[in-house]
Image (cartoon, rainbow, N blue to C red; front, side):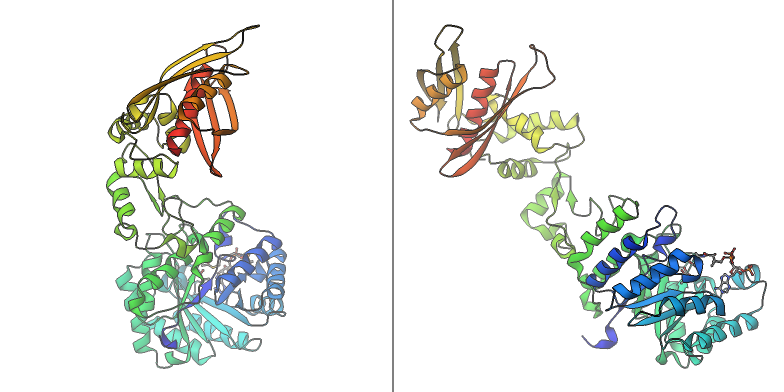
Length: 503
Ligand SMILES: CC(=O)SCCNC(=O)CCNC(=O)[C@H](O)C(C)(C)COP(=O)(O)OP(=O)(O)OC[C@H]1O[C@@H](n2cnc3c(N)ncnc32)[C@H](O)[C@@H]1OP(=O)(O)O
Ligand SMILES: CC(C)C(=O)C(=O)O
């Protein structure tokens, strides 16, 4: 990989992202995010627009002090007042950049500035010249370049590079371009701006038509070497190019030869931080970091992923800092996914009557959106002996208890083990203890109950009780679950449920 293929990542979460209603941050929050961006490996942090408010000014000052590795950039309009403020706010930055610019489309020239192409071109070059008095690194943005006439845009870019711009930003401010058009625009500038080799071309795309990332990549393929983007793609209106998408596209399509300095394993953590601090929920199907980006819920996909992850995943979730993918059980899941979760919960699949459990699972799943671990435990531990094959599992076929006050509690239990029936009776300090003791007599083993929890589903003496149990065997814990209107029966089933995971 040669350095001419190094793509610089310019993060504008704290400027374009923060422009979004409701996303405003305190200076302390901005510093926290800026430090995480530094750890992520971004090359430039656009820290704010200093002229816009005293708060934003101060944030740029504080970020400049707190962060040393990336270039700290401040936005301005093409006027001396904004540039003065930016230069002042950046005074503590180790590496600093002023980002100045002006509209470049005829629409903006006429209807925003009531001006002419010639006058705007002069204001652009003058602003860059003025900014260069303060810093060596000046980026120029040609606002609404996506809709600008290419020949005029090239003239403007040539003039600002001649005036000292080190980076030239070609924003598709309104998210208008098609990827081919935007790529061709960058190529046009590469071919027609005589001094283009003296500056880096930057792409800054908006997502109004959902093409921000595609346009940015088209820009890179055609010669741009800086991408402006935000965490989670937040930004004005429909948002900006999302940083995580660009980083992972360039990593996944490494054959293209481009590389960034992004430590991709930190992406998910930072995405969560931005989501929380900016109170801007990430859509579940958001590429790379959405809740469902690595979740599989339909049977054919789940089967494919379980057999070989890459069947349905082009990215490894660990590469973006997500621990693992998720196989979500729904009514569209198949037996492979059900088996996967039962095994994960400790069930021995050679004993489970999978077809039988699957049919009852489908009935349950049709009445719920997602089947949780608790639902599966209920499905398996409700005393329904059809869950297990006759010849391999332990099943309760009889439970009789005698108890009262002053009676001594006694229990008789009949178990079917590997198809053979065995019976025992025992006393205990209560009916549950007596029944457990009777089981010990049958299995000739002592399995200690570590945790025992009885709960009624809703309350009231007619209610169904559920029993959760943890038992210990050879130093390992096993969980059992049982339900019944009879708490002794529920306890028995929970205990046998655990035994079936041991033997
Ligand atoms: C595409 C982008 O994302 S650009 C960044 C957008 N972000 C923001 O606007 C947030 C920060 N903005 C602000 O705080 C305020 O708008 C300020 C402080 C910059 C300006 O406030 P005001 O002086 O009250 O002006 P207001 O915002 O109403 O109007 C913008 C003015 O800037 C001018 N202007 C807009 N862009 C530029 C530019 N790039 N260069 C020079 N002048 C510009 C407009 O023509 C208008 O000038 P006019 O008053 O002569 O018509
Ligand atoms: C200020 C510029 C870079 C911008 O945000 C845009 O054009 O969208």
